[in-house]
Image (cartoon, rainbow, N blue to C red; front, side, top):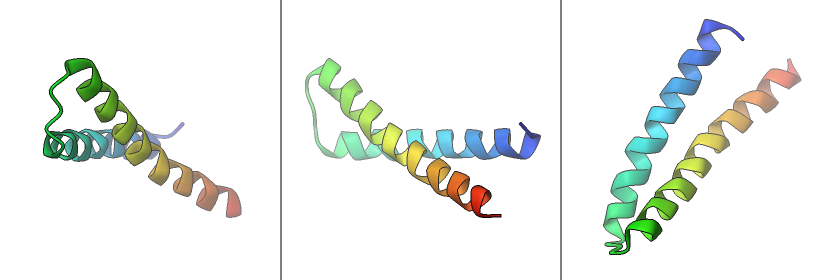
Length: 61
């Protein structure tokens, strides 16, 4: 794996956190376990979507 790929992964990981936490705060969830669960689910989708798209584009080349 190249340095470029690690940087891309870090950027998307950071974006998943930056998007997931404020979006979850918007829902005003009181239960801590549910709050963490929603953050994890949103973060997973925000992280996996661009990485999947990049992988598909890489395999087309």
